[in-house]
Length: 129
Image (tube, rainbow, N blue to C red; front, top):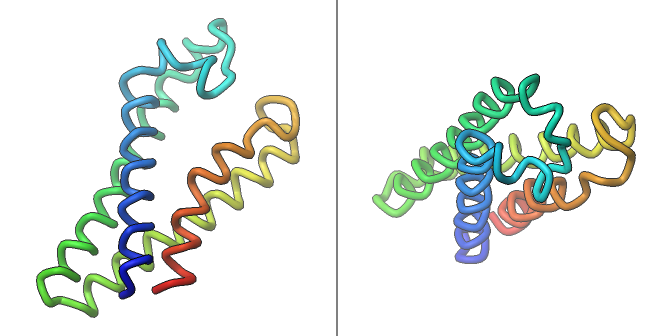
């Protein structure tokens, strides 16, 4: 796997770890500044945020495991894990983009930062793997 793909995988890991912390543990602090969620909606979404945060942690963990396997000579296992999680991230970013265009939780065109953060590093992984 190319160095560019590995660096992009590391960036994807960092993004998903950051979002894990925000969603699972700091939602009360970042609900509006990061996610544009009004304070009055927090009681209804706390459980969602906690679960969604761990979803991001598990994606990061899969990518970490893939890179570690790759660096330890397990190329097939490493590439498989990194590529699987990268596809998962890209497809999830597409789902987020569709949900944004359907205005499922807030006005249209307000989730593009999240779409790019989740999908762009993973797309680089897929292009350069």
